[in-house]
Amino acid sequence: MKYLTLFTIGPVQSFIEKARKLQDLYAGSYLLSYLSRRTMLEAQRQGARVIFPDPGQESAPNRFLMTVDSENTGALRIFCDELGKYVRSQWEEIARTVFAEAKLDYSDSARRQIRALPQVFYASEPYRGGEDFGKCYINVIKRLGSAKTLREFIQLDEPYGRKCNLMYEYNALFYREKRGHLVREAQAVTDVNIPAYKLDKYIQIGETLSAPAFVKRCLNFSLQKFDDKFPSVTDVYEMYGDKLKTGDKHGYYTIVMFDGDNMGMWYSEPKIRDKSQIEEFQGDLSRKISEFAAEKSRAIVDWSKRKNGALIYAGGEDFLGALNLRSVFPALKELRAAFGKIVDSTKYMDEKLTFSAGVVIAHVRAPLAEALRMAREAEAKAKSYPGKDAYCLTVAKHSGEVTEFVQPFFYDGNSSLDTLDRLVEVIADEKLSPKFIYQLGTELARIAETDNRTLQTEIFLIEAERILRHSEFPNPAKREETIKEVCDILQQMSPHTDLKNLLMYLRAVAFIARERGAA
View 1 (cartoon, one colour):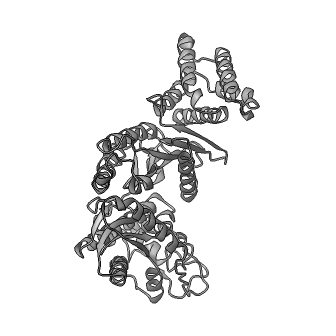
View 2 (cartoon, one colour):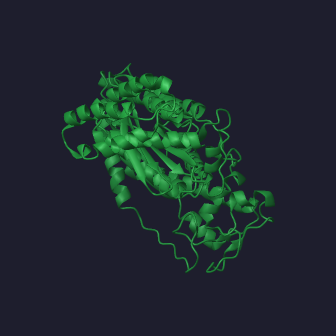
View 3 (cartoon, rainbow, N blue to C red):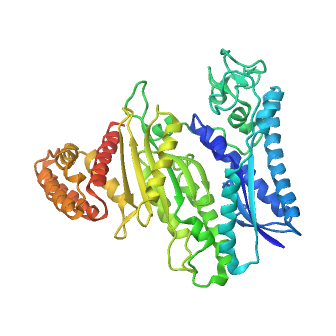
């Protein structure tokens, strides 16, 4: 009997998102991808056929779909349980190697913390092949969701003590400097364990780490291909030669997160012309998404060559990266264009695949966890845009003020990111004073609360031109040219959004222009 089986490794929250710096994010992402990739290859070795993602891609998502031939459900359960044991054995082997290389004791407390991770879930459905795929896939997803809601609670019986700075649910077992309330088994990390010139990179003075967190920090001790020279948020900010000074208010970078639109539908019930080609379509889609993630996205966001940002994760249609404020919009435009070109399924259907993105402009001193939370919320808001294929940009100022707007990637076939970049350039190059934007917002604040979109648009365009003609122009010679260009841009944008969103958009433009000029 053949079974369609969905296998997941997690939790993503513990492995990836619990991070204090970009290297923590990258290490968690790399580790989860490594475990997922190794498990897919082991499943294939034991006779399973992986449908997606491509097991050969460098960054793999934490779940994969496969078909398994098994005599009955009992034998299938044994097969999946053995895969789960394989995942845990790989993780523990990595941990053992890290502690051995660092000349630290793999204590009973450390062993219990390590063995609490990872968590493995799987769900299966009998599968006859062909057009039955969509129905089976939907049922498997539902089964997996039910399994996760009934997940086993694992209580670590740990004594009272100081908690890990990275993974708060665990006691701290490693420290750089003696702190109060450390448990008896806690070990000091000194230049005996790690060369003195590298200590700050792995554990800072005053930091206290649990066993899983320490393994993430020192992942290169076990996985030789892991690059421990990953840039910090300050490095991302300074990559264009800008220098961050102590107490500097002007120090912003961006977090970009995107995900394919309606991917569940494309994998379960794709609107292909010939339903008998569904398995062929799935394989083709998986290969193209893998090509985009493994090759193109890495070429577009590249720390070593292009110096425009740091790619944290690109697996399947998911993406997470940190980019410089100067390069984020050209890079996002290039990513969207590459996705549309590479992930092309017109051979099978008429509809095109798209993605929606969350972009957060955050201060380098702000907690990384907060920036990630806002990026995820921004991505969710972009996905609520009618028709999707959109991005939500959130400006999180160091003062605490937040400005946010949602826009489609294209206006009548033209890139909205080009429009955004052009407006920023007009203000940053001092062709137009940003006072125009703040005055427009003040004048139209009450109109923005009305529900009449037609009235909003008409009043907005009239007021925009009036205020523009009374605005300051640092370069009077280009006054009429600038007024016409800005009015044309606003005319193009206004039918696609409401006034409140448009005013937030303009406030964000003024902020970005100021930061580019201040940098």
